[in-house]
Image (cartoon, rainbow, N blue to C red):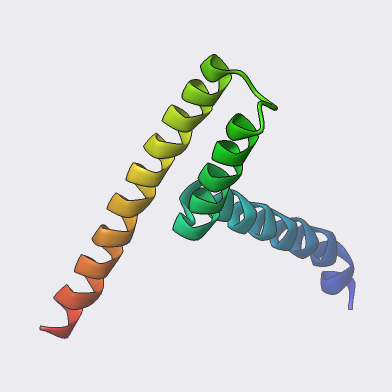
Amino acid sequence: MIHKIFTSPINLIVRIGEKVQEEVEKEFYDLEHIQKKLIHLQMMYELEEIDEESYKQSEAELLLRYEIAKKREMEQINELTKGKR
């Protein structure tokens, strides 16, 4: 009983940390999420909601994240297929 009293806050902090990590992973490495952000950015530029310099800077950042996410995806696929051989 006393063990649960002391470990519950720690377990809660661990679960919160895991959830934050999941959201960060989604934000930075989810290909579909990055594609949606690129489309949204393109629409903002076409509607003149952002200037060309902001558009190019944001686009470059998103494309870099997309490239990293794609590499990570390929590495995961390679790891999975390695185990099946």
